Each structure stands twice: as C-alpha cells, then as structure tokens.
Image: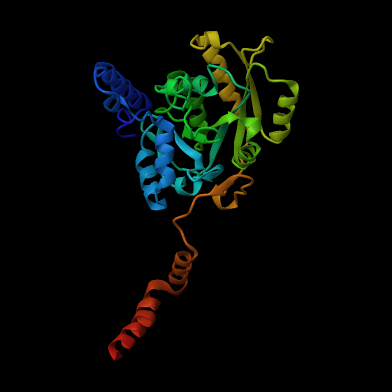
Length: 341
C-alpha cells in the first residue's frame, strides 16, 4: 500500500496540534485574527463527500482507499439532519490488497468480493467510549472519530451521531496485537476481507441503522456501557437476535471474560480480551451480499449512482448486437442520413 505513512489520522492530529500551538504564539493578535473554524476531522470528510458530485466522490474514494484511514459509510444529509445518506454504491469496487505471507498478495474488490463485517455498537454512554476503545486496537489511536482526538474539547462533531464509519482490517490498519493474534491467522485460511463498521451514538436510537447493517455478512460487537439496564439489553438482543453477537461489559461490577475496566485499557491483559472478542466475532459463516438487494428503512436513502438505466441499455445493446453489427448497420445508416442533409 503506497504512501501508507503519509495520510494517517495521527498526522492530521499533529497538524491540528501545530495550529493550536500557533494560536498560543499569536495571543497578542486581535480577536478577528485569532478566530478559527475548529472543524472536526469527521465533519470535514463527511461534508466533502456529502457535497460533491457522485463522480467526484468516487474519484476521492479511489485515491483515499490506498491509505489506512476510515470512511463514512452512512452520513447525515446536509440539508436534512433527520435523513441519512448511504454511500455504499460509490464505495463498491476498488481493489484492496494485502500480504498474508511473503510474496503472497491477496486482492479483494470492496463489497463485490466475499467479505465479513464486524459491527461495533454501544448501549449507553461512557468516557472513554467505544470508539476510543476500538482505536487502541488499530494502527492509529485516532482511527475512528472519538472523544480522545484532537479538537474534541470543542465539542462532538456535528455529523457523527447516527453516522457509520468503516475501514478494512489489514496489516496497515490493525495494531500489531490485533494483526498477530487475530487477522494474520484468519487471512492464512480465508481470502475474504474483514471490515470493521462503527455506529456512532447509542444503538437504541438507531434501529433502522441496525436493520441496515444486518443485511451485510456481519456479526455484532456490542459495548454495554455503565448504567444500562436489562430492558435496554433485551431490546438490543431482539434487534440482532438472528446475527452472531459478542457482548462487552464496560466498567461492569460483574466480572466476566468479556468485561473490561477502562482504568486499565492500556494493559495487555485488557487489550488481549478485546482481541479475543474480535476473534470470536469472526467465527460465523458469511452470507452472500449484493449491493442492489439492500433494503433501506426509516431515515436511510441511497446516494445517487453513477450508472443510469440509459447507459446500461446502451451497454446491453452493444453486447447483444456486437460492435461489428453496429458499425455496419447503425453507423452506416446515420452517415447516409447525414450525407443527404
């Protein structure tokens, strides 16, 4: 993966910190000169994709997919906060490559080739939260938008609640432990790529997003935050009852093999627990997936596609009649008519 050390989340974070240092050096400037628009990283990327034409979005994604960062799979509409745009049609197709053994390169056409998806959701709130915990397993501690990233003191990004970030789990995106303990061995036996989707916000507020994510060949990693009750857990159980699910109890009084204490997040014992939850979440048989078969409910709607029915009919016509037939009949006929004019 070329340029993997250039476009990294922590590099963006460093840039933000440098700008903040510059602000400190310029305290003598007037209020007009000091004022800056503190736009969170997620809002910046999501706004760019939401406001661009479909062809531009696809070009942007084709380029950025070469780097170990996350992408917004579902984002709110800029002109209607109650509606969400599913970006999937524009993200399907790019080739993701990774090396399983020296000299062995695997290629996967995103969302078109076989894949598995781990969906991370939460019930309740906590600090540090789900995204901060996930970031500890990734190659960057700023991979997913979280309360621990630079600029978080200015507030939650406007576009995160209800949005879904995703990335693929390969060596460039995984932390060393997650890669060595889980993904490296997985890819030695499987050619299907593993995706990690992160639903921002309390999952109980977004049942339509849950139904959307259930249509993927997916399993669910559920973070139960302190203060959740049995009724809330039962609701989640019912929403994902037909999918493989692994529950993680965060700062729970009841100690289980799937409970973690956020006071010891950086300890290897805690990180090992998280890695084993990922391994368990991958233990399911993946179903087939077709982008065109997605059913959207509630606030979700597909983004505009590049393909149009007219262009597909033209392709089908050429395929049926052959180029030779079109050249000898259609083109010749039109040339004859133009000559008469």
